[in-house]
Image (cartoon, rainbow, N blue to C red; front, side, top):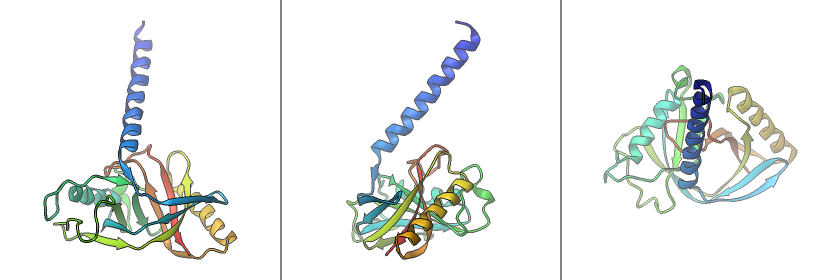
Length: 202
């Protein structure tokens, strides 16, 4: 086997390993339990009451780090809290950031992570960082549009536009502004994880 073949084989094996690890981590991480149905290319979700930890920061990367610290024990009982998916980010205007480019954002971003269903408003550990807050969200309906391939700003905007078209076509009422759901299963971010755009509807 020549050097070129060895290099290509090694590179492909490395890519397969990384992909396998990401798939395993995605499957191993608990997701929020909700009911779903398909309407006009959108997924309509019925979310139950959930407890979320959220923070507002100048960049999505900075917000992710705060939430990671909270889950890793920066709370009043120094408890490790299992991570769940999706991670939710709300930008104004809607845009995409990554750990590599997140510091270029000029507008604040609110990032939230769902706590596992075993935690209630009474049992969820309080953050020791005052910039991280716990919030209880009551049941709600959310319309979701998937983002294909790498979630560039253009693809996010197109997914948002398709979402609003479905809202208008079905006479739904949009509540608030769109959010980005990330399923990279890492508070550090990922360029390959599943991404969606969603908005609460009534």
